[in-house]
Image 1 (cartoon, rainbow, N blue to C red):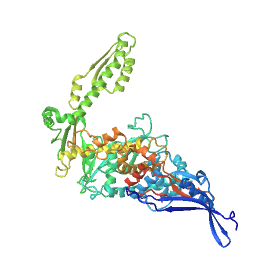
Image 2: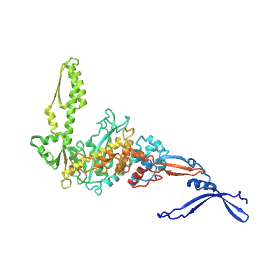
Image 3: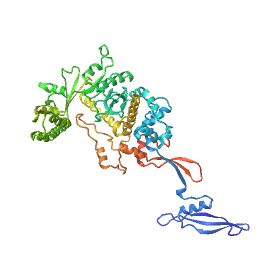
Image 4: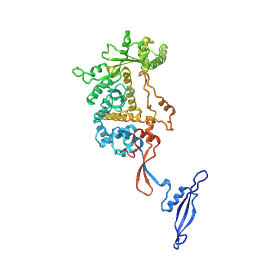
Length: 594
């Protein structure tokens, strides 16, 4: 073989250097492009080029090319054939599995998979059911749960299947969170809310007091039962004209008969647990006392409080000279404990609000008075209409004496009545039959104020997170299924918000007030979060919804390498916040949901 016919190759030479006077060791490396050829019977090498001055990666490329490897530009090495958002649905699904939610409705099957997908969708991207159908194809949820390509009929069949299993689902949640072992206080919270419907043919739709402020709209009522921390356990849907007391009676029946829980203490607001409901609460049909008697905690209405304060009654201002609460008794409430509270902050707030409303009413009435005096507005009817508009707008009619004739209008404040109402500012009185040995006065106040957790759940269900309203379903069973899906999504959200508190503005450790009557305060750590907006590592704090959206940027990609027909699934590199979000729920970042 001649000298120029041999193949070239890369040779790397590494030499151990010397140790200098400072004790530092120096090593040397070099790279050469050499040709090997045979000269007669002898194998010889020829250095074609010295590559030592080139960067190591360039030398590696020359070496790979000479060995027959096909090199392509980095941008052409792989092709991403598909990319779907994954992190948000993966995180919610991981926590759902940890909580045992997938198995809660019943045996595995397509209906159960669809129901779970509806619950997860309600947490991640609340929207209509038909919108969820198309969204499932756009994220990994559809393929991994096998619900991609589902139809509207499939969705409605799954909702009907879920609604038939509501009692079993809620009974299991009650066993987890309301039974004596997890809930030694045997306490449950219950409150009622409403939402409007679109359409007019739902049998549950009726006109009633709208808590959403949607006058003239048909609505439904739904009551939420929670444990003392506000964790949702059960929900019941009622016709839109159902009153609070009737809803309370039904939920007590559910807790007693379907959940099998005895000797519970039910906390509800003053309009829900009325005296009539209290009398019927622990009586059987023949009027005897029930063996599984229930306790309760509620509050008195303003007329009853006023009666306790009148004529030297048991409720006097002197009780609150050195304290904010006092336990009293009254013959009007035999066998009950009355815990009277006075909140100075609430008193000042109500006084300011009343003064502002009275001043606003007088300001709006002034032009009407001027028109009547100028003869530009006459007739008792037209004058009354204009005055009524103002009074109804400010809701201050009880505080004004209005005298109207065909030619005159006189308006004066009822100062005695205003003063009588002001005397009640900041006062509220709680009533309960639970003995002090089981629940002291401070604990009674705390239990009643914990109803704020149910109100918080309603905010999450209706607007903040889950967007229950408005309701578009026509069949009563579908409406109940829709509300149940929102309740189970709220159950997930309740746990997610607590787990992700370090990443969000949520107060991780709200301080326990020494005085239960005092207003709740945020912790110093939560205030620092809101002020700094970034954690010590420079990671931004996010709202709960923003964190879910950030998790959605963690995608699952289908990657195909150049020159092959094989694709593999690969996740994008998670951010530190995405890694921490999964760590906080105690789950690894999964490649697939199942």
